[in-house]
Image (cartoon, rainbow, N blue to C red; front, side, top):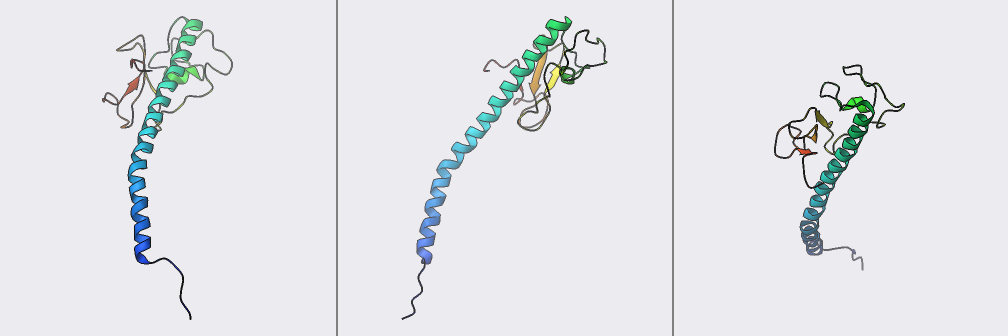
Length: 139
């Protein structure tokens, strides 16, 4: 007798339906956590940059300007006003990118505070509802 062992089409279909049902429950939870983690990372990065800006002001009596940019925290800028006191290695070692791969933005003097530090958010466009900045209260 030469009977082949294996799964029937019906058994395979039942397993695929069960896997599909599990994925429909699990996938939204995973995606929601990933989005929340990206927002948390943006808030933490902004806090780190804000702290570095405060240290810059403490040493140089003024915040970086928009023209100097956040790069002025990493390397000494030659744009006026040139910082008089700049530590070897900078105020931070390198500028982080936001969770969506874009650079953080600086407007100084700020429109909301002394300086506005923000991520353009998931859409990568300035001035939209998904921007995340140091003006957000939920840090």
